[in-house]
View (cartoon, rainbow, N blue to C red):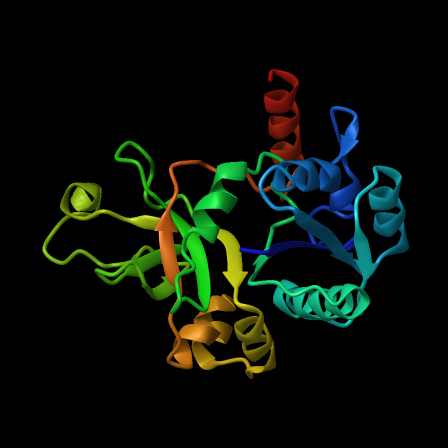
Length: 248
């Protein structure tokens, strides 16, 4: 299976400006993500709209393409990058992975697990992780409910499902809860279809673009990972990741 991994990277961030270029133990964050993704995915490219990020990727020998500054989602940026890459190389890819650029501790095995979702019927796939019994269920994140075939039913910023006739302190004893791991993979045709779809009411309400796909009657295949991911959104996150990588 020929897989393309695309890492969307913007310089602007509402909480941490210049995030992809922040130093983590001698390497910019985008390089940390790129190198870990490349352990599993043969073809990895950064998609950016910023010349500073382009130069940083070129400096460490990575592949990068410039994309429009007007994309409102990483998925649309991925589609443009995919079109540029296939036009330049005439390469054909079976699966395109949208890799989060702010997770420098990306576990390469997660990419392998995500790729394994693609049988003849899978158009889009993602990962979830079980909420641990000793973890605070209400500490934030995106929650997911699944059908018995490991297809996503709905994504929410609220804890779902609601467990009736039980105190919230006992919910984790009554049901297994899952949180979303924000990594997506698509068949190329599905990526284009997704990007062309209009935003939907549930997507807007939750500010979660994956609900657009579900609201149009599509399926998202899900696999369950055991690896935690740490997204760098604040200086506190950054210092935590620096400490963890420094101790490796």
